[in-house]
Length: 431
Image (cartoon, rainbow, N blue to C red; front, side):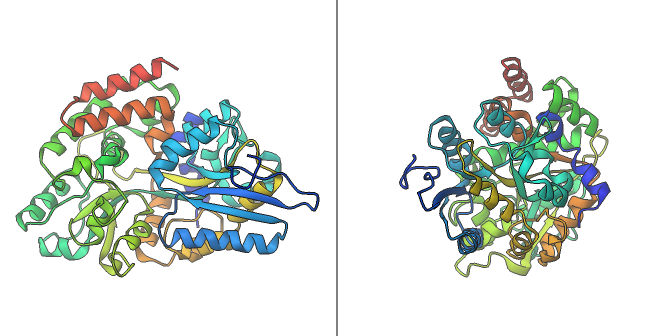
């Protein structure tokens, strides 16, 4: 269970500083009929099992409890959903009623445009249950969504391949990580799989180098001011440039997707083709759908936090993370809020935890976390001295997009550490 101190630490997430058609075939709800019937549209990113089936079961149960409601559930691949479908739908007149929401600066932008429903008056009990984890879904003291999962990322690794390469334990420093990479190469094992074709998995390397190079106070200040002049941000780029030059990734990594198919970075790890992958808490759930037996690596899967950097100002125990939640669009009927509250309930959260696809946030739902790796993440999340929200989410779409593009260019050998910082400062200057 997330204790009070853990909640306080999670409130230090960069998001807190950064936050400061009518018709069945169209997106969005159908108007209530004379008999009170309502159709809701729900978009989420759980395209594989167990999440796809689980969310459908949640919708089915809600329909059973609310005979007047029909829910059209649509699972959409994460990158398409976040970068294309949701932004386009919110700009139009027929948005979905309930949609995946990552919070932070992205939510603040949606709120400013008036495209998200303020649910503050309806979720008092839920706010009490969710505690500090809901901060990322609030803007100026008002609530515009609720999280269902809050986790951190790190390296997911294949225990058997690590043992075959003679790696004992897991790396806790950057030097130890580089040593593990060298041992995997010597054993003719691809050290790390990365889905750089989707940009954001590559960008997360710079995020983590910044996390372990910059002090928590510097990161908090940057999330608020969008000023990236501190030298630690250049240090992050220098470290990343050196890391890429060591050639730790699979052949063709620039075109590899993150989560789509056995040839994705998650698929390479799941099928024993790579030693590890830097990815979020959802990775076991994704990997399960990318192997023939539907089980991923099973007991062979392990996890460790991104290592600390000796001599830097960064906190070696700090973690990068974020959450998954849902918001109701500005046109959604009251039934959308009821569905959102149902998803945030302890019972639904506990069953979500049992799927192994993420870490719940409702008080009491942590009893559903039984997978050893998820228990390790839960312990790391609650024990981290500082948890930084995904930087592109914390900084908002303008700065975050420019940052991700610049980092992707570095992976392709077309950008320098200075180019990344310049792109971020230039984007911030347009706001």
